[in-house]
Image (cartoon, rainbow, N blue to C red; front, side, top):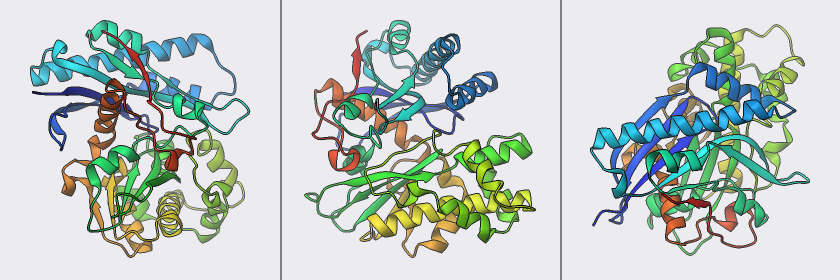
Length: 368
């Protein structure tokens, strides 16, 4: 008998909404359908403005909360039409929502993902699980990363120590020991694509540097690289998580002001190297036993970035596609899986990753 779930993921890159339909009836999830809806420019621009704003405009917040939900509904409906599956056959939707604020270490620790699950459930007639991160924060965790438990279930090997590297807007790693009794570790390493995307859009008005071609055309500037690597986040001890609150256009511009006369392509090359080094140093420092890196997320397709990671890390790197899931869909499948855990009343945070005091069941359930 099928166990059908839909997973929705919209990440820090703000490039689109990924949707997957997954059957969890067997040990290995079966991907039955997938699609990605591009983020409309006006919606993306308002999201960026909200993420960077110091004050909340409630009208803008309400607009974004509803529009992300409507985009989610469109993705679900298109996915069901594509796969010819009836909404009543879906156990639940796992909706990550769009993060617009993440501050687990403040005086009022919290994180905020928008995309009203009431609307998603009402308009699709499917039970929806959402707001996955705040219960972990309530248990004194970081609320991120949340996918390591899923990584363990899919990518663990009894033959080798593995690091699962997800390169979205922010990059994160999950360290999986070959010994299943050993605690899982993982954390956000720092910027993935977010700074490269910002710089590329500023100069080329397109959302990302395809294959890292522009970065490959430039030369790494050692002075700028050293200035950026002095960011305290990189040397902070896990558990830790980050987002656009830290690594944004202001962060980059402040560091560019400390240098002068750097070619735009050289800045892109240096940003690519920053991502590569912050990832590789994190693996060397906190996952030193790693024998293989499995990479997923949009950054897996940036050939220049993967080349620079290879240059700084003498460990085999493979795409998650070689292990059964294309890089594009790993996180969306993970949130379908997290919804399944919630529906089955199973804890799915990993305290050794997030720093939570105990395992908790994540997310709120909005019934059909």
